[in-house]
Length: 241
Image (cartoon, rainbow, N blue to C red):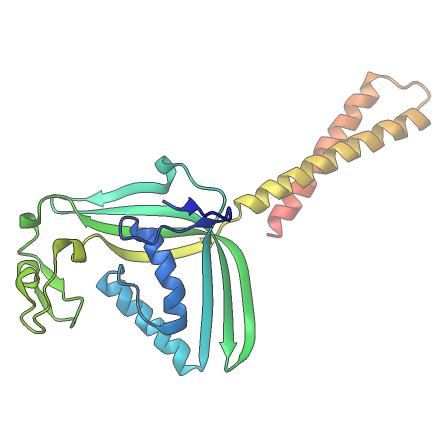
């Protein structure tokens, strides 16, 4: 889990014990160097390599800074096993984060993106003992050749690299993020409430100054007007997000 450093800032846990946070850390260096994260599965690594090659072919480069948000999701919401069988399990893990990304053409910065995001990582792991998956095929992390897991554990037939099961699982097999609008919605909600209160106060003052017989119905009318105005402002701002 992410933690607070001595300076009070929240930091990712970059160890293999928390694969999705290690992925967030490694994605930042991937953006600079093109070296795919060691915690990524073979298919995801290949997709990232293709993406980096496309950037390079267009003469583009990028820097990416992903930092944990102060708000952390409850574990019941941030972890969700959505598929499993007798050998493997696939778990979706979500974290809130802040993204700062810059794109360069040569030495010129051509675009900057600052946003709050929701990170989603799909984590694939074994559900049983090692012997249950030893006969399955796996892409060698070293040379890319396809071999059975038990062969990789004794030495890849092609590159002779040996692996432990902990080197092969768990792996992040999908990693994506999207803009998190929850904090913006909260701010807009507060704006709507403040606007509604202001409209109510102004309506009451207007009624007291201009209505001959000021009574409770004027207050009710002012409250209704304030509520309607606040709701209109809220949905107008939401529509323009």
